[in-house]
Image (cartoon, rainbow, N blue to C red; front, side, top):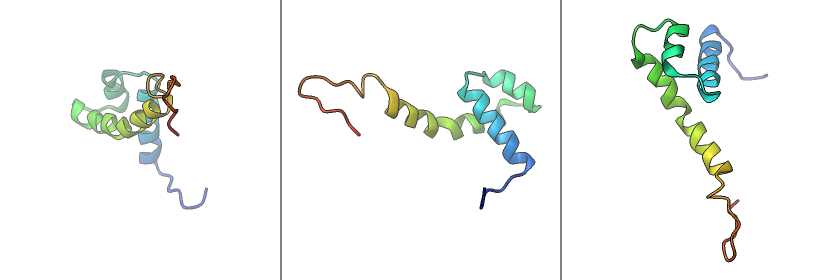
Length: 74
């Protein structure tokens, strides 16, 4: 993996992101990461917002419905 910087912070960040995207809650994540407040955990939530929006755009049954006269967006 050329150009990818691996360090403990990257692993921690990746864990937090995957944990939340798989349905984990922010209160459990706060305890797991050892944060004393939710402010730091909220940063992880904000970071995954764009990923969630992309998933919604890609897989939303409403946005991707093929109806008469309605062409599916690509």
